[in-house]
Amino acid sequence: MESLKRKHKIIIFLLSIISFSLSITISSNYTFEPAFVKKADLNCYDYNKKIPLSDKMCDHREFLNSSSGDSIHYFMIAMGKDDLSHIPYTYRLLVPKSLGLISKISLSDKINDSNYNDLLFKRISQFVRLLNFVSCFLLIFIPFYHFKEHFYEKNLSSIFYLITLMNVVNIGVLMTVPFFMLDIPTYVLFTLAASLFFRKKILGLFILICIGIFLKQIVMVLLIPLWYLILRNTKQNLLTKTFVGFFPVVLFLTSRYLISGELTNQGQLGYDFAKNPFEFHYLKVHLFNEHGGIFNFLARVFFSIGFISIITIYLYFILKRNTEFFLVVILLSISIVTLNLLLASGVLRVVQVASPFLVFYCLHVLSAKEAT
Image (tube, rainbow, N blue to C red; front, side, top):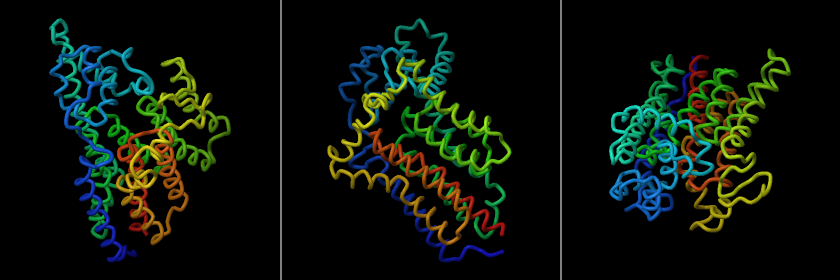
């Protein structure tokens, strides 16, 4: 059995700990995309009057989130105030509705209290922290369970642990873990999707995508690994392949129409891929409105997934294994970065969704190397 050379282990070790150190250092105070703000903005008070909440709720931790403009919508949906929100947030109903239902049940004896909305807001926030705790656990547990036999191999165990930790000790997680954001649950879904992809479980990946449509629309990039598995599968007939490959697209569009009455409007500041397919508001923001332009954008992409991407590419070129899986993972990552450039404002936390597939590729080729 040929072992990974010592120099390669040292390089991976150094890249990993630099990534951890950088993530911990800048995740909460990156100049151009901060995690926290000093005080709640004026929108907080406007939303408080609409929900309504007491003015003191603007001192709540959630309103110190630099992305509180997103999280307040998830709170309103969870509280049953969907009419106060709008697309694309109302498309992302899976987590807010689930947490809202649990929170309302837990406060059923307080429903007539004058401060019920304040209590409900706080209870939802408490369940959010529980969800984020469970999600962080799963970000480690899923790859650990998938590669459980290799974590105890003397030759590679330390490298396995370091690369696995990159799935949770990263900027995206550290930025959003105190708040009601959907990024960390999305990382969990992508981690599970990576596990299914590397085990070639077409049905499981298909079901996961269909569920994920109601979590966040970025889940549609998972069609890339799904379509790859379908094309490589020789046992399914053409009709089954067509259904499995395109039903998620039909479900995606249909669910949007049923929720908002809009089939092609994605809610990204008016982006409608039928009416104005090339009107990318955030592309202009990233290129022209933000300090540093495209270099600022690329720097944030690097801080988010740069080190795990380097390790992925490095392992591919020294081991030269699973070329097709490598290309799928790289294509998936490029697609996520491109969609972020065109359709999303946050970069550090949005691009981070590529990490699970990069992590799983690294662990997959290392486990294959150890087995030879």
